[in-house]
Length: 124
Image (tube, rainbow, N blue to C red):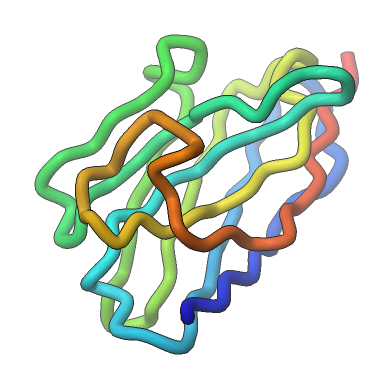
């Protein structure tokens, strides 16, 4: 079992920045690729970014490329999502997830463990 706890969400104006953190516990963190997903009201959960076990491969959704940066610190068992130039359409609950296969997939179904989510609201 892996427990994931997100933090860092909040209310920010358009153009602002937030940094999300996801702290992991329970199993060896570096055994997992990590992903960030988001879900807006009435919409399906969607891929945001993913990073493989040691950061060798990083993927982003087109909608956040150039604005968001995913990173991880295996010594701290933590994955981060730096979000810059935020837009109202980035408003959602953001979830981190762990992928035991280590692939850093874009698919929700490929992830084994999920956090409870943190709310990000971007005002216009």
